[in-house]
Image (tube, rainbow, N blue to C red):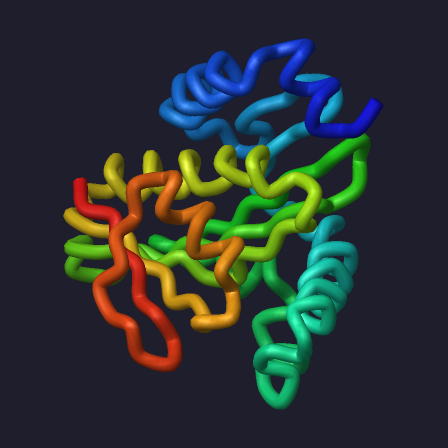
Length: 183
């Protein structure tokens, strides 16, 4: 039995999204959702090394996109500190204790928009990565933002589809395609 089907059979994907949305509105300090198999939580200092390694591996799997600068991104040295400031958030998605997804969110100081960054997920759990997106959108909305943006490479078609499924709209088709979610 694969990871995806066992979660869907146990909880039903629609029910999972509803539960995540209701839990994300509470914004506890650490855990946002836990099915016993998948969990979404805020990054803690003890997760730094594993999150950095996961992101670097995913960068390489994406064909080296950004290897010149993103692989050695200084934020990766201490993600917890980098996203510990006001208006910055970082979540990890775990499957049976292993990091399988990450997402950073930065709320602009004028609170008009938020930007998703450091979004990485393993290919086999893309549908369950919606939980990270839902939590980020909920936080952006709760912060008063009118829009949430992400920039993706034109080569990242699977990620584009994932964000389109979450109601993001393409707002720019340059080399780095911009996608926007309006509240």
